[in-house]
Amino acid sequence: MYSYVGLNNLLKAKNLKKSELTKELGISSRTIAKIGKGEKLADNVILRLCEFFGCRKEDIFTEICDNALLQALREEKNAKISGCIYHETQVRLTYNSNRIEGSRLSEDQTRLIFETNTIGAEEGVPVDDIIETANHFRAIDYVIDCAEKPLTEDIIKALHKILKNGTRDSYLSWFNVGEYKARPNVVGGMETTPPARVTGEIKKLLETYSAKSDVDIRDIIRFHHDFEKIHPFQDGNGRVGRLIAFKECLRFNIVPFIIEDSKKMFYYRGLKEWISEQGFLIETCLDGQDTYRALLRYFDIPFND
Image (cartoon, rainbow, N blue to C red; front, side):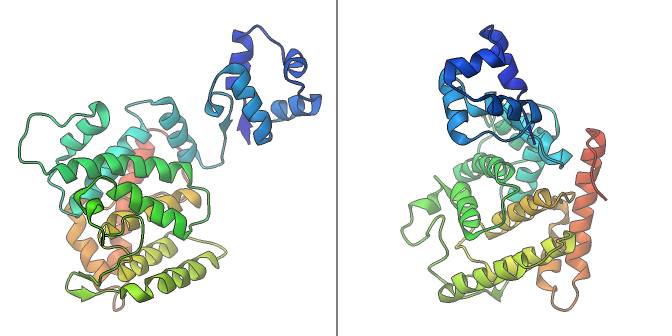
């Protein structure tokens, strides 16, 4: 479903009626009827409208979805509204996810970068921490934009490329930003999938996940564990994995979870001991879901439970 309130405002600014627009651009009355019903217009029609009004397609229409959270995130992102759920999601998800991976930035510094694009006067903060924080904000925007699309390798690789772009790692020829690892790596003292097998294991994981007809929060948590066990990239796997989980929660209208830095030892334990006891990771993620659920209540956003 789409809302063409923006188009109505543009028509008012030009003192035009919809019927007059059909004559100006040769648009059929059937297309005008689609606008009234909130149906999607053809891309070539949108392009002609953008050229006529000198605007972006986002200025003409807004996609309306049944997921109240995703709708709010998109509206606030596009309108650059501060102090709401989009703002808090950006700051809290970025701070906690980066902090789990060793970032020295505080939550206040993370908030400052998002709100003012500055870091403050403190010294001793690694440049990569700042770059990866700004990149994480862009990665969340990407997740919001593609939330309803099926999860693919292209999306996974795009997230890695956004996150690591401009960091020191990106200048290393062997690091493969946006591509799977070229060298074996170890996480938490445990061996991960060898580079030669990564593509096959990721494809298998996606096929198994995509075959599910009714995805719930536990399916997303299981996918997260299996993704981290493969550890497909040279670095950045934890952040990519948590962004994927956030995307899939939005896709299936499930309350997302944010793993807080203060709970990272429970989170690590859950990942490590999944085979023998799945409850550790599940309970940690459900606790993170409760944290985000409290945000939804504060901002009065309805959610499924």
